[in-house]
Length: 214
Image (cartoon, rainbow, N blue to C red; front, side, top):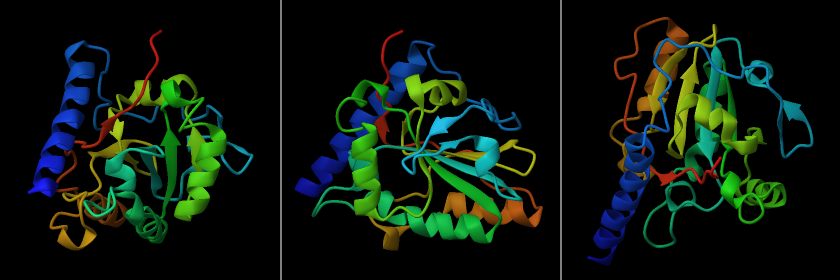
């Protein structure tokens, strides 16, 4: 019973956050078929290097996952849900096998002096054993350019850096074993194989990206 109440409350919070941004016209979602914005802009990584989307792309394209250090949809909640973070390394392996690069992007500028500081990102990545790059999106510029709403929110670009899939990783943030629709994995397989992606857009689910007023 308590689990159901938590899940319902989390869903409401996530949807309200997304609806607010859209309802105020502050976000325009990047359209399928559009080129990746800011592809040559350098972003600081936890490895001490500056990365660009172009430099991170693989032969078949690039997977971008907007993420953070604390959202329960990312990190889970002990005894209640797994969150998607535990699947990140498996997604990275699938992406690499399919010829895609992958990067985690932290756009939570409003929490940059706290939970989403560079130091906290480094510690969190070490604790979670991230295998992929993790970078700072200063002033949430990339998130704004793509219309990213939540953590997580994924964008898959093909070899021409054209958007071919956007939305959620799969249909179950609570448990990897309960996943019935691995949307992102299917999209990568189809794109790498040169076939049409059956489900190329799904609804992102997660905590709202913590933006600052401009």
